[in-house]
Image 1 (cartoon, rainbow, N blue to C red):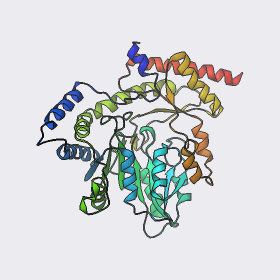
Image 2 (cartoon, helix red, strand yellow):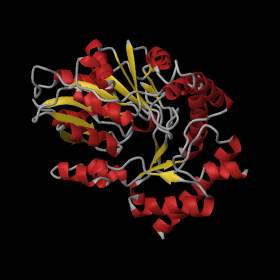
Image 3 (tube, rainbow, N blue to C red):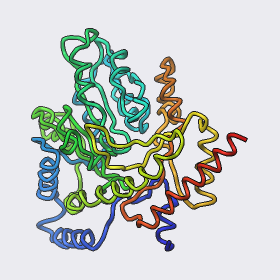
Length: 392
């Protein structure tokens, strides 16, 4: 294994999740040189429109709206719900904190839901218990590259007798799920609105930051376009626009998406075969309705690896084998004090248990086959060593 591969696998989430090459260098130089002309400048309308058109085709939606960041895009999405002080938004407790901070920042009450123990996504059965007449939206995150069971979530919402006349909207946070499929098509079509991130660690990135919302709702499309560009003399707004070079790079990166996801899935497939033999270790694999893009390669360790033992395994992988891991993710109130303050009365034993058993092992499309085999062999050794310590 060369030095570059050793350095790469030392990160649980590599700082650059995509692959950049001469194509990105050429498009950046091209757009930069063109924009240096005083009567052209950096106005991004053409490049952004092209990127949005390509992205809407990918997701088979009527509209795609690009932003300079996914966090700001989620803020604007929730703003489009016209939140009142009694409104509630339900979301899975296993999540990235930024998703729940957006809910709190809107003024809505954040209602946390248990995850499905197999997929780590929002559990439709538990959702049913948390719906009320004040539920404004259900915010479903596609954890680590696997889609949630949106059809079951829709059925729960449609059949609930606890809701008011107006049924809550479904918003999907697919920040980690670019390249993921739902029922044979790319995710994005199955909800009222779906959010994607192009932050540096993601499957593709627009120079480190960026986001996209897809929808079939014309009114939402119009609102978001106004919000991102100072209201366009019609509405409240500020500046959330994607830059010209970001959009141009986004189109270039999007051409690589299928190959990038294929490389991730091939690596994960080799791991799945080998690691499925480990005692009581669960793998976040494909489901009947979704093919995982494997933004993170996620394992759920057995009960006797809860908490401290899981952390020992992670330390051993790093110290003895040079392999980075992350926990993606514990309940958000375990990481963020503001979320904790807003959810103090909410008890989520399943989420807390899973949050102490999750471990995500470094995955990246540029990991070589022999390096991937080294990761597999090393994990099996480290797991066995940690397990023996547990039983002694």
